[in-house]
Length: 205
Image 1 (cartoon, rainbow, N blue to C red):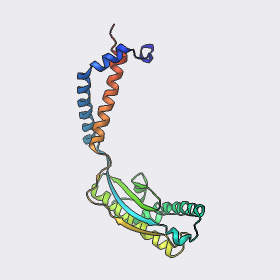
Image 2: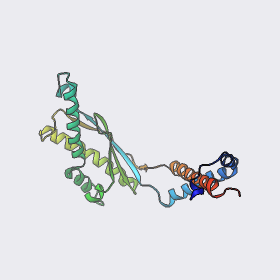
Image 3: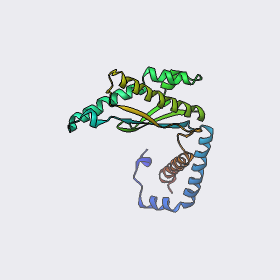
Image 4: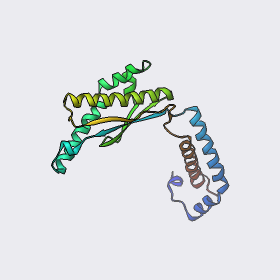
């Protein structure tokens, strides 16, 4: 244990730098391992749809009251997030795709990003690229329809809020993580392990 936790000396660092052949092979091996992991256990496909949300601050708050606008945005954003994951929207998405249930959708398949005044990103992760695209498009469309319905019927949502689908998910969807990330992580992990071995377990007598 003392050997492991003792700080490296200057000779250790020099020996580490001299092992350039080892690092070259290590980067290659780590990259190959990362590539193998990518194909053996690939990440899910990720589809992406965008809904433009406009709070219409000028109409909702005609007076220039920044504090009131801040609380207005915060309050209405929470309502919109609740709509995005509401039973009404999720069940409508599941009904539009008969081979999936609402419970499956709630188990990490749906990711909402950048909820604010502007573009809302609707991501769906799935093993099937076509289904991922179909689910993301259905989620964005049903969200926009539900926002329009609640704003028009004044069911707790400000009537000035508008939601418009500006981008449907394209098929086939791409992987949620690229193979280059697997290669990079594999190389880094291999080099870290190699550094530990060289510095702490392979000291000259």
